[in-house]
Image (cartoon, rainbow, N blue to C red; front, side):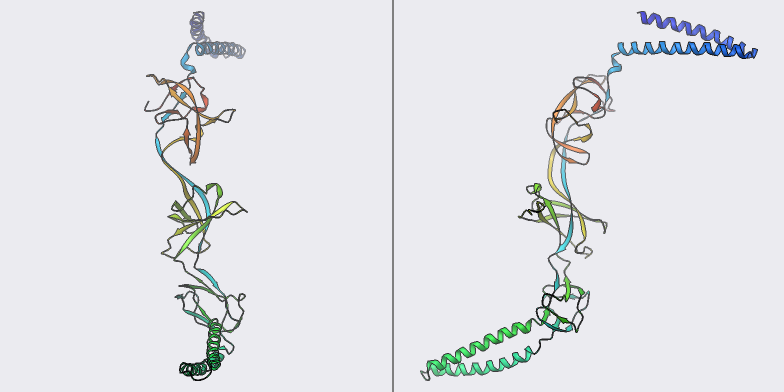
Length: 391
């Protein structure tokens, strides 16, 4: 009551001072008396400071008496089931099992190269020829000797069947014939190594050795052949995901250089954990009808390692943590018509994230009304006012 009387008295003072000041100020201005004008200004400034102090006192009393000034304003949302998909992001390289650098199996001069770079070839097609150093002539002579040994063996066999001749003659003829066959087979294998054939169908990507050069087995690269039809991406996955990354999992593949994105699946998961980096191999198949995807191309991978069609998701920004390391958020309860309610702290457990949202695996249920804006400025049991547009 005392405060109200003070406020009314102050109002009368201000009103009376205001009307008098206006007349006197105008008179002083008309008088052009500098000393009087300055004195009047000093008087008015003192009155202004006094009024400000009194207003401040009144604001403090109003804040103490008005409960509505203590209620923080908040916004809320109701918790619903959401479709949640978590993706493991990795980087991988494109490769193919049909990419091979061909080496010679025979030492000699590369006498003929029958293909050019960019040429498509079929499996088994002759690509090049190495000088056999006279092996072909030796093979021809052995075949002549083999014919004689065969004729001799067949004659001795007929005589032996008729009980004519000795067993030793028959066995010698048979042994000689079989030895000739083995010698021919071995020499044919050597001669076959002088002919370079395509191990699979594909394209000659590069030719390293020119015709007329001397080549050596395991040392001289002849050419590279590649097939872009059976391409895949290989990547290393940390061992902690060994139970989540399985065959058939969906994968989003992006090729930054090509500006291209495709959807694929995990086609193979390795069974071996590399002890050096604690990872295992994963292969992702990729279609390549346009032949635009090349070996060793870098790819960004997003592997769907976890899905939940009925997940409870909340913004990560509303989560706080207490001294014990427990995570908590606030919900509202006991709502009344004017939007007022009570804040209640809820201890929660969280799982994986999806952008700015995180899955709550324990502590909340569908229908809970979660405090969003203002979540970090309220306390447990505090009165709050909801200002949602739909509340």
